[in-house]
Image (cartoon, rainbow, N blue to C red; front, side):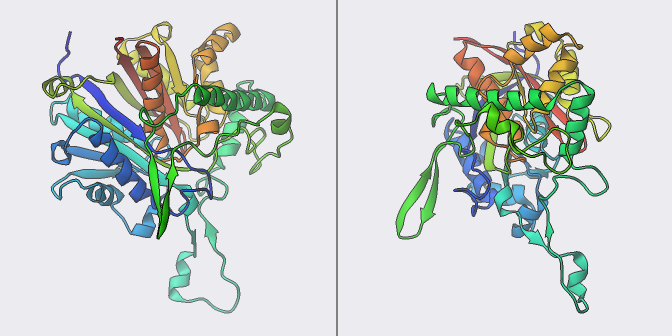
Length: 408
């Protein structure tokens, strides 16, 4: 039975994700955003002028600042959308692109509009080194220090996120060894999924052509970050980072590059256009808690999302929790299992079944929409079902979504 103003996803796509300093290192995130916006519309033959609102997530302002500002406006125009297009840039840290989807969902749900697009992009490789503000007004004798906006992965006046994640993991009884084991499994699950054709061009992935002047373009069509040669022994030997008690470069994702986009409609409009939805959105939520609890916020967010959707964990077939660090799915699963080891293991068996950001990559402004589409496409392969996805953002913000995918 169709609910009033029910919202469906009709198209979802992302670029392959590039590694730090890799193939995509010189491409502006705004250009990557334009690519996925064009592709998400092209796949379902929707014209740019039909989209009533675009919400666009990005989380590293120093990189988009190279193009000055209004990245949403720039990306939509570069994508060929009309000058009358309405767009808004969203910065909610790693939650940004899922928050972008949430804003579009909410606008359709209230009946204000019928078609919205949520997107996000990031090129962390392109993040500049910056001079401190006082340099503009001159400096006396002596060296001038450059600031690295990525170093430490923290916020001024707060701990590096790796420190908070590691400390909170230990408080929940999640050890460094647990996190290394999850990281290894993430890499192995992705390698298996890739070998089975789950990350081929045409579902969540699109092909990216990189011009090379007079030479043929580089064709970029697979994620660049996965490390199928990972072993537990290698992971155990990696040093801790930024003073964290558990986090290493191996049980964390990279500083990655990519873009993602999701096109939503009212169910009524999708039927009118003859489009078969990829999924129905049952609910979307936003959360926040004490800033240091970033490893726990996906668990709290899933609890809130399931309550709002009037759905229980037992009714959920698959879970996606963004692997900002391995701590996040492990701590969150323990919260959801209320500390029961057997229930926690059962939840983890259906979490990130094709690997997560530790293997795929984590271009922060694009990851929220990525986990949602990864969830949807896997539910479709399995003949349908319900899924929940959640992502943490800096200083313990969270976004979550519950979806229902119809079977054939």
